[in-house]
Amino acid sequence: MSAPAKPQPTAKPANFLRQVIERDLAAEAYAGRRFGGSPGDAAHHAAGAHDPARIRTRFPPEPNGYLHIGHAKSVCLNFGLAREFGGVCHLRFDDTNPEKEEQEFVDAIIEMVHWLGWSWDANGVSHLYYASDYFDFMYRAGEYLIEAGLAYVDEQTAEAMRASRGDFNTPGTDSPYRDRSREDNLRLFREMRDGKHADGAMVLRAKIDMASPNINLRDPAMYRIRHAAHHRTGDNWCIYPTYDWAHGVSDAIENITHSICTLEFEDHRPLYDWFNQRLAEAGLLQEPLPQQIEFARLNLTNVVLSKRKLIQLVEEGHVDGWDDPRMPTLVGARRRGFTPEGFRSFADRIGVSKADSWIDFSILEDCMREHLNGVAPRRIAVLDPVKLVIENYPEGKEEDCEAPNHPQKPDWGKRKVPFSRELWIEREDFAETPPKGYFRLFPGNKVRLRYGYVVECTGYDATSDTVRCRYDPDTKSGTPGAEKVKVKGNIHWLSARHSHAAEVRLYDRLFRVPYPGAGETDFLHDLNPDSKKVIEAQLEPALREAKPEEIFQFERHGYFVADRIDSKGREPKFNRAVTLRDSWQK
Ligand code: ATP
Ligand code: MG
Image 1 (tube, rainbow, N blue to C red):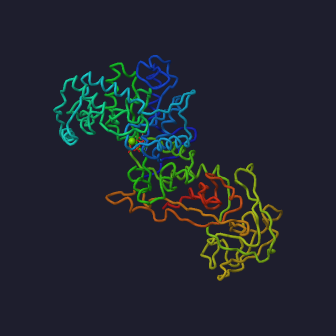
Image 2: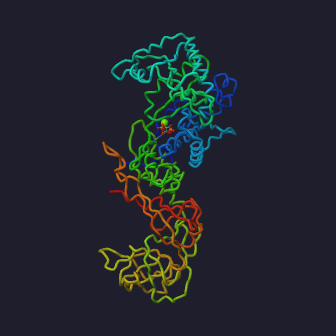
Image 3: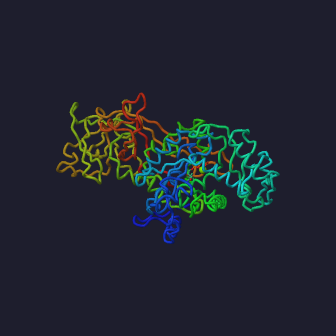
C-alpha cells in the first residue's frame, strides 16, 4: 500500500465527513434544534433555547478496556470536526453492559482523551455523559413500543431464537410469542424489570420484519435480563439494553447531529433509524434526528488493535502490561514518548475513508519524529560505550564544552558539557581495521569530538578495551581557528568521570510483519523477538535532572523519554520513542 500524500498545511485533507457536515450546515438541516441544557427527551429540549452548537458529535467508548491508537483516530475525528464547525463533542460512556465495565476504565479513558488534548466542556457545560443515565428513558420508551404494538417479550431459548432468525438466504420465522397481547407483553416486561425472571428466560424484541433481507431488522433484541451489578446504577436494574437499542436513543437524547462510527455498523443503520423514528413519531425524541455515518476503522501495519488479542498479549505475558511502551494502547504510547500532537497530526494526515485500508506504521512514527524534532531538547548519550583516552590531555584537568540545546533554536541556549582525559564514545564509532568508506575513528585517522577538539587515533589496547588518541589543543569548537583542521567524521562523547550509567530501553515494533496473524497463522508467531532491548548507557550530567515524561533527542540516536520513577529508581530510566530515521524501509 502506498502512503497517502502529505496534506498541504493550509488545506485539510479530503474528508467525506466534512462534506456531509458542510452540506447539512448549508441546508440548515439542524438549525431549528433546541437544547434543554442537558440530555433529555423531546419535551426537555423543547423547553430549552436554540442549540448554540452548530453540530454535535460524540466519542462513545465502552468502559471495558484501555483506549488504543484506533480510538485516538476516532477521538481526534469527533472532537476535531466539532471544533472545526463550531460544534460540541460529547464524551459518552456506552456503559450498557454491566459485566465487563469498570470505573477504572472510565477514569483511564477520561485521562487519555484529556491527554490527547480534547475537552468536552463548552460554554461552561461539561458534556460528559453515561448511557446508563438514560436507562429510565429507555425503559419508558420500551413500554411505549410495547403499547404501540412494536415490541414483544419472547420466551424462546437463545438457540431457538438464533435458529428462527434465518440467514442470508433464508427468511426468519416468527416466534410463537410474537403475537402476544399488549397487556401480556407489558406485564412480562415489568416482571423482567422487577427481577421476577432468571437471566436468559426472556428478552424484549422489537417487532419489525422477520423476512427483512437485512438480518438486523429481524426482530432484534432490545433488553436482556442480567442479574448483575452495574458500575454506576448498582442493583437498580436487572435488565440491560442492547447496543442497537441504546446507541441511537442515546445519540438522540443528547442532540447529536452526526453519529460517526466504524463500517461494521453500516448494516445496523436502518435499525438505528427505525428505533429513533418510531420514538420521534410518538413525540418522545426531538427531530431532526441524528444521522449515523460510517468510516473505515484504522488498521496499522505491524500492530494489532483487537481487544481480544491485546488482552492475550497482556495475560500471557508477551508484554509487560497494558502500559508496556510497545503496546498500541495510549497509556503504552505515552510511556513510549509518543505525543498528543503527534497523534493529532497523524489523524489529520491519514484522513478518513469509506474503504478499509492499512496505514503504514512508519507514518505514525514520522508524525512523532516531526513533532519531537521541534520540541525535544538535544542531549548526549553513549548507548554502547567504549573508553577513549587522550594521551596528551593532562590527568585531573577538566574543562567545559558548550552544546546547543536545539540546533535550530538559538534562544534555547547552550549547556556546559564537561570534558576530560577519559571519555566514552560509541563502540561503532571506532574500527581497528576500518571497512571501506569508514571515516570515523581508526588508527591514524582524525575526527572531531563534537563541541570539543579534533583528535587523532593512535591505537587500541585490547586488554583494557581502550581506544587511544591525541588531541590538538588549537581546535576547540567555538574558538578562533578551530576549523583549520578539516575532518570528515564528527562523533559524540561523554567525560567518563562526569557521566552516569542508566538503564535505557530500546523499543522497536512489537510485530515483525506488516499483517500479524494474516492467513491462518497465529499472530503470536509474528511477535518481533527484538522488540525490547535493555541496555546500560552513559548519559550526560544534565539528564540526571530529567522529569518523568520529559522527552529528549539523544544526538545521532533518536528520541527518548524519561520513564516514571519506579520504587527503587534514583536516576531516571529512558525509553526510546523512535529512531531518527526509519530503519524498516526496504
Ligand atoms: P469492542 O470490540 O469492545 O466494541 P471497540 O474497539 O469498538 O471494541 P469501543 O469502546 O466500542 O471499542 O470504541 C469506541 C469508539 O472507538 C467507537 O466509536 C469505535 O467505532 C471507535 N474505534 C474503535 N476502534 C477503532 C479503530 N481501529 N479505528 C477507528 N475507530 C475505532
Ligand atoms: Mg465497539
